[in-house]
Length: 372
Image (tube, rainbow, N blue to C red; front, side):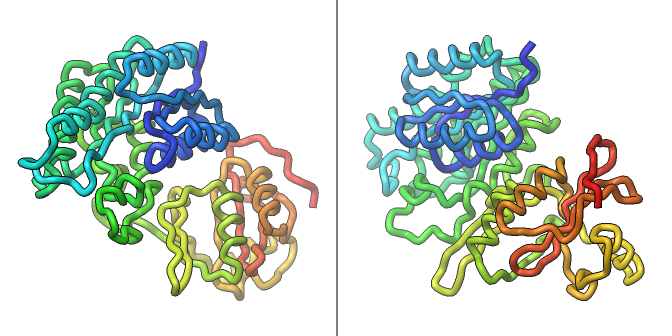
């Protein structure tokens, strides 16, 4: 029996669809993806296939024959755990007022944003597994009366009502209509022609919330993607800010070495920056004696780890693999892989900028540490 998790994501060659596909591929979801641009879709498939099984089918979700092809792929994959209706259409750019909106164009936008998502679900309904998740990507334009957004906004409002009724009629599924917020995407740029949208977050900022909906235990309903899973009070994020000498080398070390997702990035005349999601973050406070004990445990000696004052400790699934990946991208081992007295498998590394990083694997796993 096929026990793999499989998701169908439409419009996955760029923007939010591609960002979500990358996030799920890193979590070993099998993927079925589509887009109208065959060349861009193939480039996405090649990138994603480095991490998981990917089926890419070029086509337009407004085409019934294409939707049938998606159903065939879903059957071949053993069924679907999730469908993400991300593909859609903006309409004219700039957006015209409703009284000036070409009705034939509005019909096309309705077809892409409302009828096609339902058509996808009708096509794959027999391939949806029990408790399947369905995410229909919506927008605040579907609930707020923004002047000049009547065409696009009315289609998203229709999609939201369609989603709510779908949830009421199919309680065995979890149906979410999820608002990803403003994003630095081509569609958003098309909506604001000539404007600088560099202050908008990258679509990756909305991915953790969407993954939480797909993997968590949330009731059907409307959600803002960037608020899903966030505490309502207290600290929402702990961020360690590092100033580095070689930005690109450091970005590859943390982004590629640890497989972290980009939440935001900028390249301005006054400097470059990137924000990487690192799962759950904590602050660990040690007194001098405990810090010395930890350093002796991980490195076999006392060095400059205490005096540096800042050290990163990253909880990973596989210490050996994470350490090897980081060393491949510029770090070097300060000490051997050790089985600590508190039951973890740790290895201390040093980055090219001199920061000490401990990668550790929690107890309850089988691993043979290296001999010091």
